[in-house]
Length: 347
Ligand code: ATP
Ligand code: FE2
Image (tube, rainbow, N blue to C red):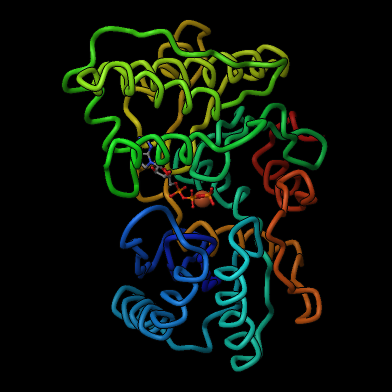
């Protein structure tokens, strides 16, 4: 079986995983936690540089224990890494390690788009065939669907990602990073009264920065209503995302939803999407939490799919792409794979 070693390190999480066609052999990670405020790109990169050797060794040791067929370095067929999008200093640090390892082991290098890795690991873990994807994380919020060799972005945020919006508001409330889970907790435990929040959907796009400002203003006026305001923030933002996802399903005629990205762990968002999909007779998919947030397994897994279609790169082509968009990537692996499964959707 083919084994790929994948590096993830676009932002807060440094993660290295070894994956084969059937399963994740082992994943090791180290998380950067800001002392105060949000993620500082250079500090995060320093964290990654300091931890890289350790994390790679842990992943290799773990794979050795896990792999029944016997594991040695010469069984690794290729190295994949997150080429973008992400924070420049973090991407650069991790790309350097990936290049060095590929050169040392004399094996191919594969540059992976981080957003598409979120999608493909979600499809793999859930067995989703051809879903409309809602990808919601710190820096990104997009609705996508596959069509004619690309993941098309059908709708996206016009300003900040929903995760960043939640984190910013949480910081304003004095909560530490990451704020999303803490807001979820507050909303769930005590939030009941809906307070007006701006609902901003423009065509198929949405915006969250006005909502964040409005929530901060509301706290200024009603400092004792934190839980209600967290609840209202979530209800408004998640309704916007659900509306656009539903419209994308109607436009594309697809009957599956796949939720991916760190914010996908939110139970209220999952519930809204599940209700909407049930109402439409569609199937709702969400992978386990460890595959929603940033993880090395998704980079290794997409690397494996890309290796099979020969999508490797030279060292010269391996420069980082901080603004890498998912629709820039020719999806070379889906046609062949789906054809084997006899899916007539793929043309
Ligand atoms: P990307 O590079 O894809 O933008 P990322 O670096 O933001 O990824 P992720 O792990 O995908 O990393 O997402 C992190 C975000 O998810 C943070 O903003 C965090 O607050 C948010 N988050 C995590 N759990 C929850 C939750 N239960 N509810 C809401 N938000 C959550
Ligand atoms: Fe991510």
